[in-house]
Length: 243
Image (cartoon, rainbow, N blue to C red; front, top):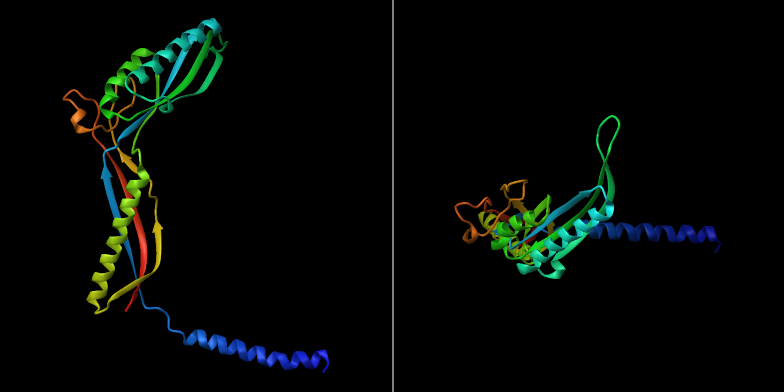
């Protein structure tokens, strides 16, 4: 049998096999599903705060400016340690030393400026206001940001996710019951939307915006810190088989 005859003989079998497979797929019943969305939200007070601050020191002599700056930085770091902040929770970054000129038409040399950013993570929020005041007195003259957050957001997200799944199951069961159906095993599960914590807060501190939430037990009538909460929200999509 030559090659052409072989191809002619095999082709009908391939067409027949494909047709049988397609027919079998069409005959296979599609799963009866009910798809729902479950959402859960957990609100908790933050349990730590990260202070991002800057120290800017000026002098017409660069060596003097650097010496003054080092003294202020050491004082700030020592102050953080004195309230129980661990070494790993203190970091210094973005050190710069550059000449400073006036903004006149013909710029005048004003001196040298030494700048550095210091980040401090405080785990005892009751010390926040007192520490911030002392840091400003110690030489901090720039507040880049204050971030209140959860020390272990992963654990909270897992809890919220479990609640969202339970909510989805309860919703599916209720909807199916209205139609005289029973919910079976889950067919498909997916998580949607951001799951990172969101923080709603507002407060002011003399000299800049450095406010944030703090435990109510640590607030006084003269406190400039407004209470706030971290919101962890999780949404899941689940499809269940109907039995």
